[in-house]
Length: 104
Image (cartoon, rainbow, N blue to C red):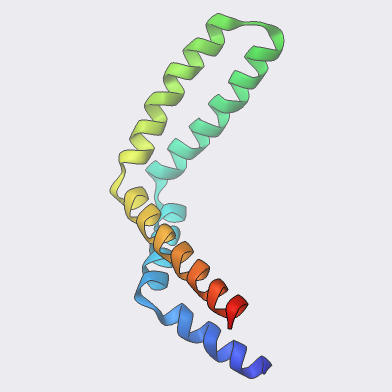
């Protein structure tokens, strides 16, 4: 049974959707611009949290505007758009497989 599970795992990993998802995931990790945007998004989120704690509304709003700009750049990147598309495809595949295993 364990061997069958390993075979199924290998077949799933060979599916076009899974291969594309993994390719775009790797591309995100290697893309300097995307990593720069991600770091700035994370840093701004931390700054916003700190600004809220200390009651600095002006700093919070400034960070919020910058964050929107970085998020827009990030989300409009074709690598991210493809990654999200294939991530959704893989999630649907996993959901379908889960239903089959659960009900059969």
